[in-house]
Image 1 (tube, rainbow, N blue to C red):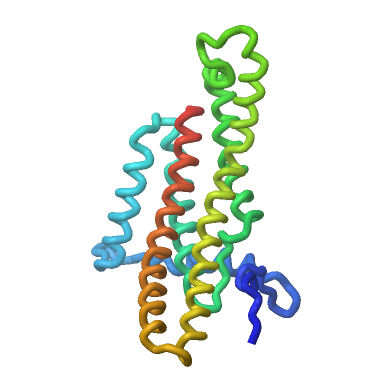
Image 2: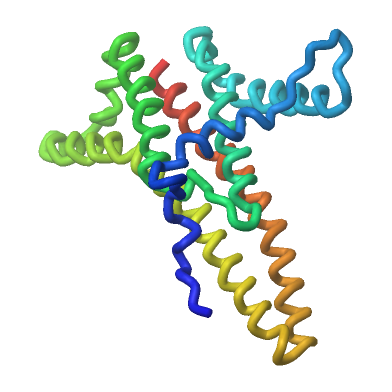
Length: 226
């Protein structure tokens, strides 16, 4: 049976209506909450991880930058849970869609840049022209720095999309090879299946690392503009 390699990246529909919104809203429902004074081990571990991540990302920021702490923590939790749920069989990963990643990256980047121009306009403009630049190179450097600034959200989105998509494609190919070889050569099938298990463990790590990298880069853009 022939199967489309990119079928898992097509946005799903229910009765002809796009279901991507429901899938995007589903991960927050999996975050456990507690109504009791004494938390269980799961809630305690979750709060410890959130506190550790928030402390590491917010250590470099001033008071104005730390007002973004709730948004950045929510962002890393959302991306991490979405990436992990996408590793389940027959599931859809919203972060493989460049449009969604751009929808996350552009507003956050624009908010950080606008905050920089409002609060520290001299420092923000100084990034376009390094100190000691020869006069003939000034126009070229201004253009280069402007382009490098404008492509930052695109780099954020493309990095996340490419890493998640590449991992899913590789898992799909190795899984298909394992299934095809199961009726041909059992020892080779066991070797390929072992590789598939190791790749799955690697993809779990990549899902978490990419969520952290995306949020950390947004935090660095914020730090440069506050």
